[in-house]
Length: 131
Image (tube, rainbow, N blue to C red; front, side):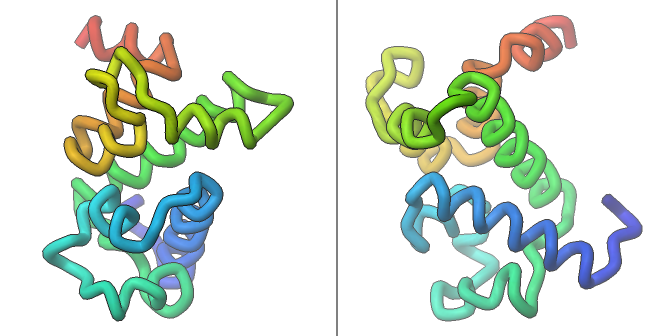
């Protein structure tokens, strides 16, 4: 992702914001999940994906990868009904200490995204255990 044009970065940012919109996550929580709480004021958030891109530093790229991977894993796990996938994200789960997957991502940042991704994608979880 090093050689992205501004337009490509904005397009990727728009796709990630759309995923979070589909997950029914509010603006403040989007900012926390994306790791932007110290980087982007709430009033500027709406420009992301329109005229500004998400940060493409190493943490930003990892967050983007995890969000896209979680969305793909949800599509694989719940291929017939995206509403069930959305419901799963908002229900407390024993794997996440009775927190919702969304809360886990908000409270734990990249580590929370990785936990949710690993739970949904056993191949990814296996890769983590091998490394």
